[in-house]
Image (tube, rainbow, N blue to C red):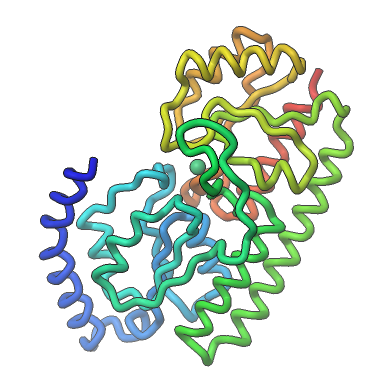
Amino acid sequence: MTKLRAVGLRILAPLLIVATVTAACSSTGSGDGEKADKPLVATTFTVLADMAQRIGGDRVTVESITRPGADIHEYEPTSGDLKRVAGADLLISNGLGVDDWLSRFLDSSDAAHAVASEGVEPMPIRSGDYEGKPNPHAWMSPIAGRTYLHNIAAALSRVDPEGEREYTERAEEFGAELDALHTRATGVVEALPPAHRTLVTCEGAFSYLARDVGLDELYLWAVNTEAQGTPQQVASLIDEVRERRVPAVFCESTVSDSAMQQVARATGARLAGTLYVDSLSGPEGDVPTYVDLVGHDLDLITEGLSSR
Ligand SMILES: [Zn+2]
């Protein structure tokens, strides 16, 4: 893996220089004036892009480096990615280890860098190869999501001080929607029979949300970077699902659900649909925005765990 990455870098470095020169030329050209004058903000994945776009509004241009549906944990940036974000004024990553691959962009860029999760108290990964490392999926909790909005508004204000008031106001409006989502989520969980308050997913990506709304969390593998759906993971989850009589299990949009299908078959639990975590859908899909993503997951979880 390390060797492959080193080779990739050697190939990509000259491309980046070409892309930077091209970007510089287009921003001084006469054709594309308005767009080129706006700060270009690049984020590591689509959830952060939606947050930045909504807070930035029409004052900024936002690009997500990874596309909808991508595996963000072990992403290998392409020459196309480097071209798209060459000349970015601000790079926004999640932090907590999920998008350390951004360092390849930072090394060759003058852009400011903001870590959206900064200030969130990390929860540790509870098992597997990465046990004890920070669980990166803090955005799944609307409470932690508020910290993201604050950090993104502050970063945009540093790059574009004249927009500070707008950014702060939009982050505040957005934050009020997250508060409403949190209230709804806690209400949803309180309405479930206590024996049904276990959320079973493929990746252990719901730790922050589960903690903040009062769910127990079970999963096949702790984080998508480790082996997925091993016989041991499947067997141990089958035991727990049987013991707790969990009515419904779930899997996420960016991974295969075949191991969870095995769990469902063996236990009689229903495989109750696709949750979104690491990526938004495309604009025509189920969850084109971050608020849609959390809302969709809550609906699916409620519907699945309410059944008997
Ligand atoms: Zn993940």
